Length: 392
Image 1 (cartoon, rainbow, N blue to C red):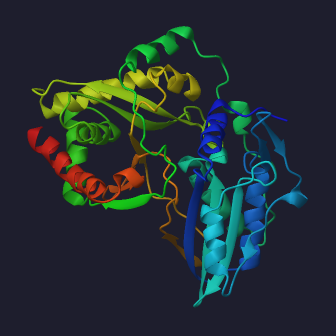
Image 2 (cartoon, one colour):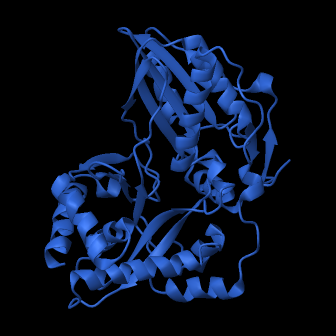
Image 3 (cartoon, helix red, strand yellow):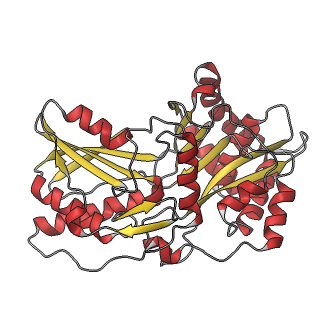
């Protein structure tokens, strides 16, 4: 049985301490057109069976994963009828008994000439990148079956084999301890409350502003967005610590893996109020670069390096590319917006930065930030991005 990675153990420990379902990752689609539900169910089973992270149970006490034989893997359940809504809620939001069930679920229901599809993965077996791989695999398998061809054999790499396992270098741990000194935060509810979602209204003006600021300053789009969030997080201070989601997918092998190959890196920035917009953005880009240089340190070691007992940040920034898509022959798939019921971080900023089109943003907050505070944050970010651009 393979050993769990440090990130997987950290996720399981967090959920165990909280005592609630912190890490279900929901996804939903409405499928319109000619949909072969038998082929869809078979394609779902094929995808689950070929990925090691999805076809195993997880023993937190022993720190191991146990492969599950094909006959014990879940099927894509047909919930057409009055019970569909309740079943979809279970797929999306219920906790997983990971010692007895694999970390993936699925159900569909036919309604009004369309098919609604609900999918759920536990974070211990995936991340946003993983969702993209799963949906691509699902579409390929379905289209292959519709075309009357056999499904491809073989399995992609396992996250248990490619996740970095080298012990943390003492110098790197000391760097994190020195960098995070004085930056501890104690989330008011530890993330164990309902989540609330607010749209961040980013239109063409804001997208142009972000891209223009990044180009003028010679930094990434993520650096501009992280800088704006940092200024909002600590408006009266010249120091902030923001968590930045970064995936350890820097090799062709790792980019094929379904699994949580990521770390939430604390990015500590200290700037002078007199700095211009370019300097502030560059300063954040440099801070991100320094954190990335030390990202091979296990996540648990980074958190332990922070003073106190809380996380070193309240705001987390997650920047992804094109929106997730499911491509099925003869059908149009439209994403059903779903977000987790339980807040993992007090303040989570998600940005989708497509190759073409406007940046999309959402702000998900815990109970402590519900209401006017969260709405003010969501409304303030677009103006902050325009201020950066005007000052560039």
